[in-house]
Image 1 (cartoon, helix red, strand yellow):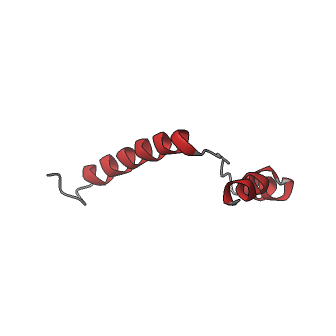
Image 2 (tube, rainbow, N blue to C red):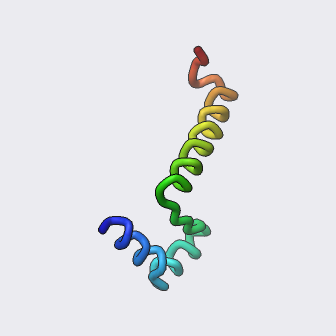
Length: 58
């Protein structure tokens, strides 16, 4: 049910308009596609934090 509700939200013209004003892209992913996106983004963010010296590598 939550996925269906989110699918409806991201399709709503008012929501799309609000996100456009914020220059925020809308990307709806689920299941394995979302997991791949999440994992890649976590690696990207961790690499950035390491570059500025805020986390230690093991």
